[in-house]
Length: 187
Image (cartoon, rainbow, N blue to C red):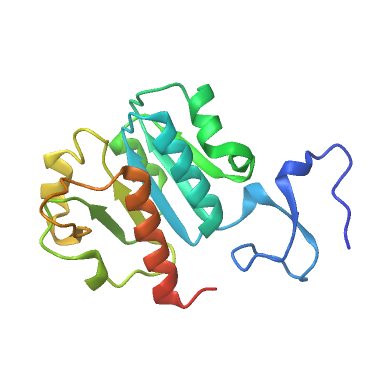
């Protein structure tokens, strides 16, 4: 097997056993910071570091890139954020952008799904495709009305019983990302 280049940080290198990582020869090392994610998970103005850390862990598990749209309710180097992500944060592909417009300019064009309890369409009726972006709002406010109005035909909801106002943000991300993988029949 190929050795990591001298001076390379081990955390960015991994043997190619992961179906989400491109490599011309299975078993060779690839640089983690250059894989093409199967999904993009966007957190619009997240407020709680534990939730964001847990979402980061889910993104590592499914091979998704995490996008954080400012303002954030915590520092990116916040102890609680890293604690919730445990030792997975070093393997996470992530990026922070200043605002929604910056995200739209930076994120490669593709299909985008907006998760909100206000949507009519159930997420189980959506047909997710590789490269899709799954967008989630802040814990207390959800997504802004302006975004929901602009993309009304791309809004989806995760159904709950009437006794539950909404699911925890990190749980919602896990439900949505694993549904995408299920649809693709990815192990």
